[in-house]
Amino acid sequence: MFMQGLIAFFGQSYPFSYRGRSLVIFVLPLTLLTFIFLYLFEPFNVYVPEQRMAFVWICLIQSLAAGLAFFVTLRLVASWVNDRGWTILKEMLLLTLALFMAGLVLFLIRDFLYDNPYNWSWKYLYEEVRNTFLVGVLLIATGVSLNFSRLLRHHKASAKALQLAGGMAGKQDPIQPLYIKTLLKGDHFWLDPSGFLFARSDGNYLEIFSEKDGQAIRSIKRVTIKEFEKQVAHLPGFLRTHRCCLVNLNKVTAVRGNAQGYLLSLEAEAGPVPVARNMIPAFKAMIRP
Image (tube, one colour):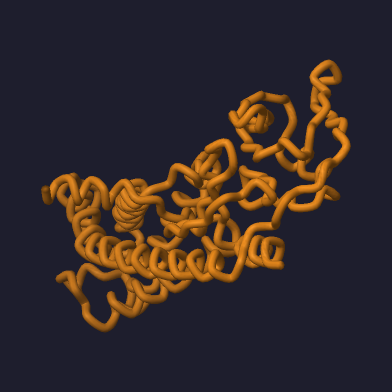
């Protein structure tokens, strides 16, 4: 029973927050806290005669090196992460990888900080990686768990209040079919806005879900979601709710919250479609009467 609960917890959706400004906001305080922790508490014994400089400078260089390792690791991973499939387990594994890279970097700069002929040894590689994990693992586990609980409570309460406030965009008036241009001239197509449910990007391809006779029909077109969004921007109720999803709000039947933001259920049992945290204000503005 305990293992089932643990597996279910690690499989929960979790927001991926390591792009652009969010990545900088994460790394800078982490670097500062690392410096304060190392300097004030001196958690690891170091033989003072080996130090090439004052202890405060060693702490500062180690903190900056660890912060840079985190920044580079998270930025590289961000380029291929699928936000929709991100979970608590993946978050913890990613931060564990970043800790390992930070420990590796601290090992590589030992010659700059310490005068020790054995700096380049398995012993000190193990020591630097171990010390990095001793500092970071507990903080990661605690921080991710607390942040998940906070986001989940907030978004669930927000989604519930939103539904009570009256919610969806309402019945959609008939709209003339719209001619959509794709990356391939022979792949251009007519879109029926009244039957459109949502679109989901997959690189330069777009999965388009439409309703026909109460069923969700899926088609694939060679067009980016950015280009598709430009062509349907004038249609009422059409909103880019996520970096990879655009939805017809007139088809939304229910809203529920999770740690990443909202999840939308649509007619014809389509979805769920995510609403990213940064898109929640725009979503609320469009569905409220």
